[in-house]
Amino acid sequence: MFKVDWAQYAPDLLSGLKNTLIYTALGFAGAAVLGLLLALMRTSKTRLLRWPAGAYTEVFKNIPLIVIIYMGYYGLAGDPFDINLGVMQAAVLSLAIFYAAYLSEIFRAALVGVHSGQREAAQALGLNRMTTFGSVIFPQGVRLALAGTNTMAVDMLKSSSLLVIISAGELFQVGKSASSATFRTMEVMLVIAAIYFAMCYPLSQGLLWLERRMHDGAPLSPRRARRLRKARAMLGVAQVGVAS
Amino acid sequence: MSTVPGVAPAATTTTAPKPVVDVQGLVKSFDGRVVLNDVDVRVWPGKILSIIGQSGGGKTTLMRCINLLEVPDRGRIEIAGETVFSGTRVVCRDLARLRQSVGMVFQRFHLFPHLTAVENVMLAQMKARRAGEDQALENAVRLLRRVHLAHRGLAFPEQMSGGEQQRVAIARALALQPKVLLFDEPTSALDPESTREVLRVMRELADDGMTMIIVTHEVPFARRISDWVVFVDGGVIVEQGPPADVLDRPAEARTKAFLTAFDEPAAAS
Image (tube, rainbow over all chains, first blue to last red; front, side, top):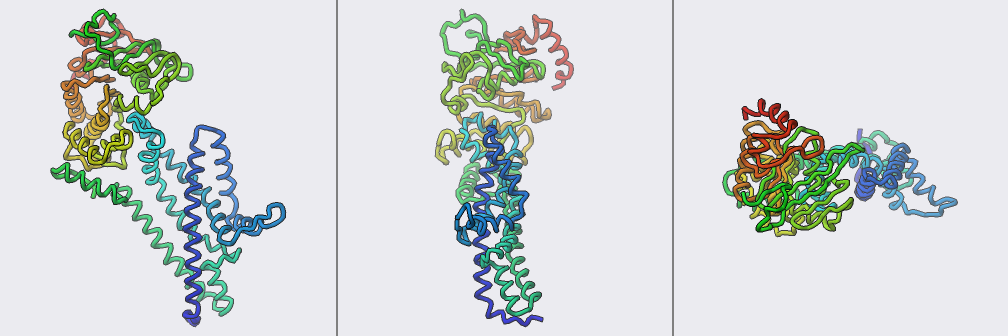
């Protein structure tokens, strides 16, 4: 059944794989930053911040990603705008803009989900607003947001294949070229699907593992691990009922 | 008792120490409903003030006004001689610093669930006081010992009983060496065994000379521990005085009614 000369396509596949990973990584980083900003705006007391963030989310949640990609690359280049984005810029930007809308929903729910008593307890201890957010609200929000964020990360990795319409040279486009050159569409697409699976499955499993570790309160930074070791040594006596 | 806490005329202030907490003419309303109406409270160093009264009577709001978690409508609040609220405005420039000198223990603990007990006690020292890690840890371990919980130092809040969580919360509130500790119904969410553990720690703090304000439903405990008892109802102080007066020989009908209603179920504990 497998008749394509895959050795010949290996360099293309590798470069497609690399591009897919770069678009996803940068797009996700952008979406996470923008999504957090939007979530903070949406939970703000000021209507002037809440309203635009809410409008943004509703607009971009209800437009297909492929339209945003097309607008970003071809639309902006055209008449009134004349903004010529490179393929990389357009790809990363459209992924970030689109997924920020979804992530902002997830982040907002997570921030709201942190009990209001937590903020009060932090304030009562004399922590300022920045520290209250950074040391108390954010770490708990991350735990609540991780499951939804996990889904979105995998979804973005798969949806980066839509970048084929601006010839972004990602994995799916390599497969498409290979299939038109060899006319063995099913074989090629099976291989492409297998590669996507081989990326997405470990990604989601890895994030699930991270979620479980966080839920158990395990230290994720070496600094905290060191602090807990020190505490264990100083507390001395056998600790009762302690998570590892 | 040489110095009298509360709002008794200041004639007895012979050595004239400054009150740790001085609240005058406090008014607070929520959506037009007056919760506190012209309330005066004064607590002297090393003294323990208990606030009793029905739920919804304004006790908790009074506590929350003292560290300005709730902003009063009107009145004057002084903490250790420093005016932090005056007229209708917060005049304290540095709220964070004010709150470091006023520790608070909540009814529902509000420990930070993502941190172990010892980290809960360390956090404010490192983030608000910029203490070094070793110093904060040493202090936290000492405080956990003080609340008899060194063996639970690495447990997370969800792994602890309510009484253990509340004792960690007390250690956390003590970590910044506050001038006064506020307890907002510290045992209302606890079973009898946990209640005993927490009251024991509070009694030990009292013996060490800690200045405390306690909102409580534990009348027998309030009788034993307090220097001064305030009965609040309907947003006003109905009656106040030494526990032997207010709790055993109340003058006001409302206080009597409250205590008789309360004594029956509370007699068991």
